[in-house]
Length: 157
Image 1 (cartoon, rainbow, N blue to C red):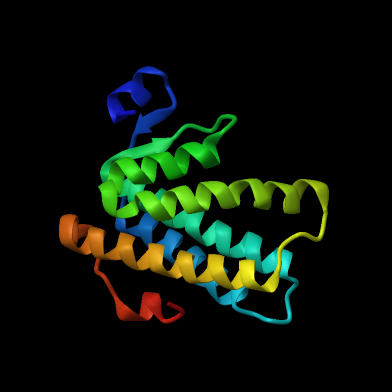
Image 2: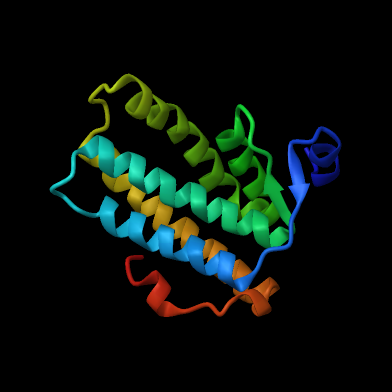
């Protein structure tokens, strides 16, 4: 898969991000990471909220690469595929992990079943934090004008 192929298939669009857009994504990510750490929430909500933090983090990486995922069926899966394109091999394992979590998040949100365990909620939160760090380091290194990389953004990491 390549950006050019995805563009031809109309699955992604060229996109120029802004510091304002990235700041909004960072705010959402920080909120979701904080909420996912709340032990008073159910494991399902913690899991789904940490998953959303990872999804927004992938969107941030894709935006910095100059693209936006088209709104269509399968856009969550494609978002994690796009993160691998944007970040390279360093993101492959985490992106694949989040894609596997996507199925469980779908069950949580669409069936209403109680399915996530405490261990799973803790694990996805840990991986979402690691993924954010990976993306912020990449942005700081490759797109310093889209930073700045700030420790306060990662206070929940």
